[in-house]
Amino acid sequence: MECRPHCAACCIAPSISSPIPGMPVVDGISKPAGVRCIQLDEQDRCKLFGRPERPAVCSSLRPDADMCGSSREQAMRWLGATEALTAPIC
Image (cartoon, rainbow, N blue to C red; front, top):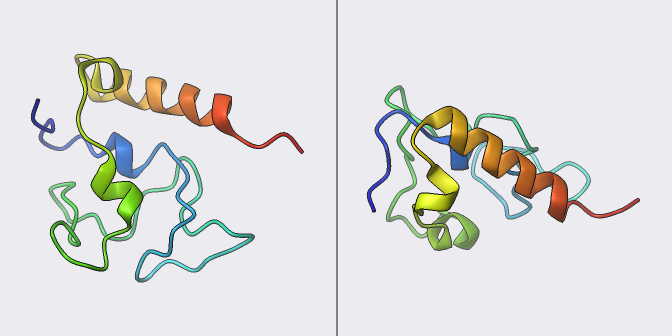
């Protein structure tokens, strides 16, 4: 499966704790859930794609029919729900 053009749901919906160039780490999180990654360009493509600075978690996430659904909105809902289910209990 290929990434949907102008989607970037996986670069917005989940939180990312790995350091991302240009994003400060606050309370162990470099990109909070629901925040657009600073490394997305105007076409919603990763500026770090294929570069060693790209976090391993980003490189390991691959498009999948369940995760991506049939629209960006479905992908945002699925990823948001997964984020909520896997968030630490405080």
